[in-house]
Length: 293
Ligand SMILES: [Zn+2]
Ligand SMILES: [Zn+2]
Image (cartoon, rainbow, N blue to C red; front, side):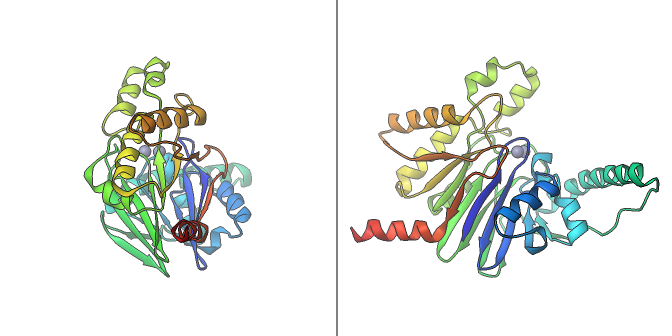
């Protein structure tokens, strides 16, 4: 199993999971053209996607999912409420595309294709080839937000972004995840000092908003204290205005050190381009090496 971050942040989220010829996206928050370009650099294409799993109906996660599904017939898998809310947003996007096309060609054509969707109930599990994907509910202000864990060949990863607070169901899957992609959205003091409207600051900091660096650190401390340090951790969904990679790593490392967890390596998934890649085989090899010695 290989996992690549294609983009992570409020301008678009998209992760590629590959296993034995199966290619799956978690979220599709970039344009179809950008996804096409990034998939090419990963040795695949939109046509070779088996599915797009959507976490929730915010535009930085679903942007091109409807277009990709209509144009290439790729199944979109999500909870029932997320699909319902997403279709409304995709319809708007498809109408806009048709209008842009009409401006170019002078003729208004009916949008082609249909949305190929499949409901995965919250807490449900879906297998595609040897890849098994499970949904886990999280606290966020969309119709029905979930995060996903993915398992193959005895290894597991989890993408945990877009949540305002830790809730009990996230922990058990985290303990068993070799790769953890963890939201570190904002530095709370920077958020409060920012020029954003008060209602927006309150929304981001609420239990249904996004995780601060400190909240991420608390989650990570509990995971490490319960299940050890053998997790690869990427910090993700960083705010452009109220955080930056250096600051996030520094804040979280300080919190970990206050709990006597030293030298824990943290990487940061970048906002606007493919950045990190994790190969389960390498991680398994490293674990075996540690065990051997
Ligand atoms: Zn988001
Ligand atoms: Zn969101």
